[in-house]
Image (cartoon, rainbow, N blue to C red; front, side, top):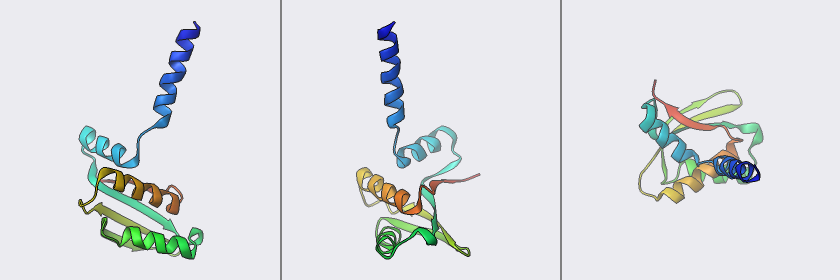
Length: 114
C-alpha cells in the first residue's frame, strides 16, 4: 500500500512540475490546431510595471526574438500579439516567455486561431 501511495505521489509530482508555455502551445497546436504555432498574447497592466521592468519588457517585445503582430492599447492595459522570429533556441524562447509571464503577472497565453 505504501508503494502505491508513493508511486502516486511521484506521478503527481512529475505532472505538477509541468511544461513551459512554449511546449503547452506547441502541444495544443499539434493536438487541436486551434492555436497559432509559436504565437502568444500578452496583456500588460501598466500599473504593475516599474521603470526597470519597462526597459526589460521593451527589450523582449521589441527585440530580435519576437515580431509584434498586433498592439492594442486600452485605458490601463496594452495587449500584444507576438510571434517568435525563429532565430533563437528553444531554451532562449522559454526564458523570454518566463520573463514576460513575470512582467505581465501571468497574463500570457497561446494565441488562438478560432
